[in-house]
Image 1 (cartoon, rainbow, N blue to C red):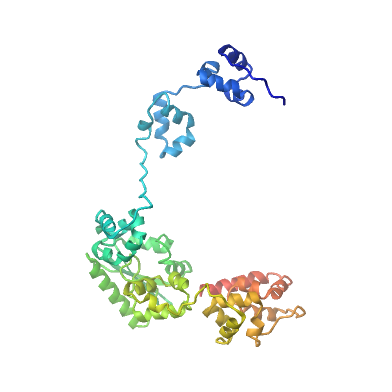
Image 2 (image 1 turned 30 degrees about the vertical axis):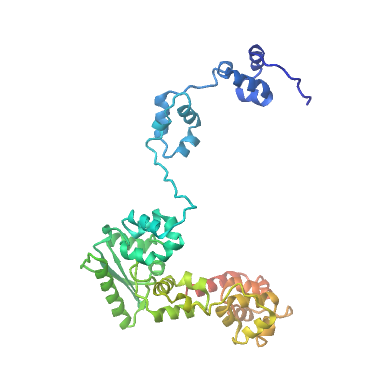
Length: 411
């Protein structure tokens, strides 16, 4: 297209040009200079009178009441939103029923001890402090003062008391002891998995898989936290002494099922976590919090495996000598095992293990013997690829292998 010559846009010229377009945005697209001149002279309303609808005050207020937030009002009714801010000047009245967004605390504030205690003084419970003053709670000073703050503030509101004990007894000699202020609500949470996090995941799974159980509710109610904890721990000790397996995971004084964790339980949990801090923190939160509270977490994790350690060939082979089979090394030192697999040194480290060749005739029995050497389906695919490809010949075998690994993971 050839560039148009410059025109000095007078009001008469603009009106003649505007007759060529039916809508204002067409004029804006095809002749922007004329459109800008018209907006500068404020005659666009006269040029396109039918296209500009003037909203009434009552109509704008009616549309605003249908919306819950300012963003929703702007998206659903942009014309009314613009009118409320423009010629009607009633935006504050339109938005009066909508919730006001809380101003977040400034990020660059240095949280001293005095400031943290000032934030604590504004809260009635520890839960309220954790939710409303996130920056103070997560600061270095806030972390160091958490135990003192817990002593000063109650964990939850007074409405949580009085509480009573409830018990789930399952046929497979497992038991769960908990406390609640509302039996009906807590029972529905256990049976529909509506509670916070995974506190009652095992109970939900057992109920779903139709394992028979008996449910007990105590008539006695307790009005203080100390009394309910004492009663709950008495029942836990009673069931432990009779040889029941406890399903309670979390530490004492938690809202869900609580169990008092000793130092012996913490040491057992650390052994099960195979010297991995992240695994210990995720899978044993009660033991982790108990070790932090009692102040021996650093001493406990002195010999923890460092994931940033550089594993050479010599180090890997010396580490592999500590284990008789590869899956033992995988359980105890996952980082070293992965590096060993990446470098292709598994056959050197564990020569007793049979190295699979491509010429092997993969029968049904041989495939299953290879499957049982791995703990997950992902490991089976990664470490025995030739065997995995041979499963295509057997119809429906891959589905059976997946079911087998899912059954193992549940146990």
